[in-house]
Length: 356
Image 1 (spheres, one colour):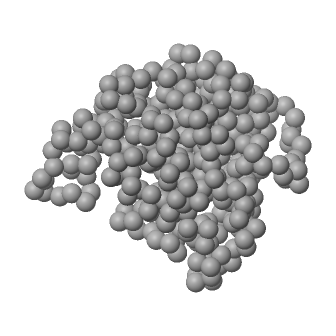
Image 2 (cartoon, one colour):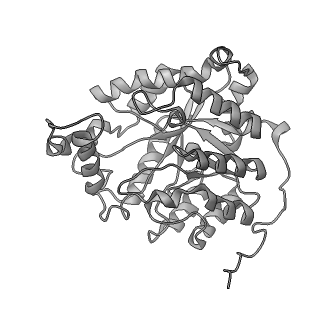
Image 3 (cartoon, rainbow, N blue to C red):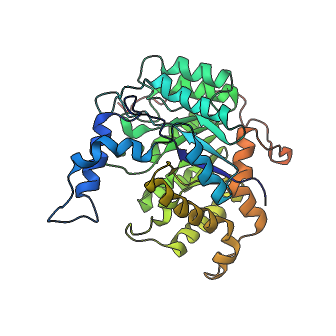
């Protein structure tokens, strides 16, 4: 089988006393553990019981747990996604933003060929543009991840220097489009704002994450954007058909959505991703089996899809599971897919003026 690359993996690199996640974010996670679904009154969990060990329960400071999970699932490489929640949650953890990003770069060096780190600072943070330019310039970062939900829109002019940097280096920009309350601001993830980005940067490789989950109308917007903008691709995570025990969905629904995207934009613009996270803990060991199941759904897609009257070729599976992303990252040479820049300049038109 061709190279398999997971386009969406998180790696928490914090250590005791030098945590990665802001305290408010950690408390929110503990609060959900104690009182969120499927918990119900009378509650027998106290969020304070988890707080001190919450981050270490999910941390992988040297990347070994993530590599172990990848090996178990037959995944060759993955994109490391960094999320800067510090400004959104009102306070920073002990570890600085530069240190967090450097952790991912160091882990990628420790495990050659297994990790492709993406930069992911809050674009409002002082020094973030210089850090992204430096990291993309020296090859440490293989792309940029944009998290609008932390407090900005993707068409904010403040992001345009970031997009220009990625365009000049020919590296992709990944954009979140999911709904994730309560402390985030998911209205800012509305994919409709991506239309301004692809209009102003028609040659910029844009990857849409989450495909608008869980809203059907957001899903259709993502699909419409990708149909119209030829440099836009879509990453499909397990969210698209729901995690086990999370609401409606299921394998058939997920496979039908993959087929719908394939039929609209082609298998050559779809990426496999899991939004995975691993650790050398009991929790992390449990995640390995989940990861194997998630990967196998894709690997067995031709046979699984037949049960629902849907056809996928092995060539399509190979493209979606790694070759497409490998092409964007420069890890796979596929000259037959190369195309000249559509317009040849960085910005197609001036930003539209507001209606009087």
